Amino acid sequence: MRFNGIVPYILKNIGDIAGSNDPQKKITSPGFLRMLLDYSPNIQYPEIHDGECRDLRIRYMPRGCDNVIDAPVCEGIISPSWKEQTIPELLYRGVSMVIPYDLLCKLEREAMQPESFGTPAAEGWKILWAFMQTNINDLLTQIDKTLLLEQAAKWGVNVAYTPANNTPKNIIFGKTQGMTDGIVRLITDAQTNEISGRFPIVGNGAVNNFMVWNNMKSGTDLLGFGSQDFSIYNDVHSTSVWGANHFGVFEPGYIGLIHVNQYGNIVRGQFGDTFYFRIPIQIDGGKTIWFDAMMKKDGCPMPTIHLVISLNYALWNMPSEVFNTCDRLSGYNGSLHYVGVNEDCIRVCTSGSSEPEVEPEEKP
Image (tube, helix red, strand yellow):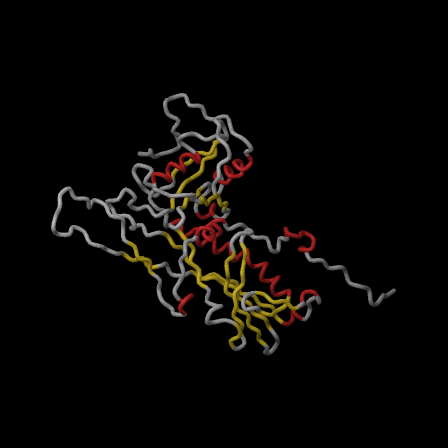
């Protein structure tokens, strides 16, 4: 027996089932990128304000040293000397998406609902923005990884150790703090490197484990230590780029994210068959970063929608020559490299020193 007109199966979107945990739109936390957004100094390319394409340079005068005299002289000994740093060339990362007519004509009515997004508002369909959201994670991941790779070549000298160099230093995180390890050591290292105020930490493994454990403390431990207030950004991508358990300590104002929006100022809105706009993406419920976007509608031979979202960006670090060679901070640039060691026990001092044996270098 043949039955005509049987209703099709019921189709539900996985997002309607998973809710806020929708895997189509889940973002893998780009910890380094988020830290840069939270702590970046005010660095902008001139074209954002003036509409002119020019290079950006940072002028600085190294801190003076070995210039003190012990008797008056008539002739000048030193005079102002400026140096300039050229901002790194911008990197580009983007995602290009296409929705052809043979797909459009098969979509459910819900997917074809009109919807606008971005600034200035681009008009499209619900399926277009859903398609874009499923590709945001890949874009953010690649941006975060390239920033991590850039930082891997820009670690500064840590003057809290002898000899002063930029090799990663071991930091022990245990069930309690000691005078020569954990957060105590990071604080004293920061003091020696003249870091002022609160400093963010980015990394993976042991340092993130410490953050989780630290946030669970409701009182003091056996040695009287309570919960410590630190900004620690977990970044799973740093494992493959920096190494397992590696993390960085950064001085605010000494590192930053530069990103330039190509669209939204002079180039904005409709140009021929292409619409140029910007879209806001919020990361981990924190800061928002604006991406460039362009949407092109081709009508021959069949309608096709092209959507490209992209970002032009660069990592900025304080010049390593900002302190003279005669200065105690020579080579310091505000980024210190460490490796976390997880020691899940209470260590007892049996000698006059509790210095960790894993630390290959001694503090001066």
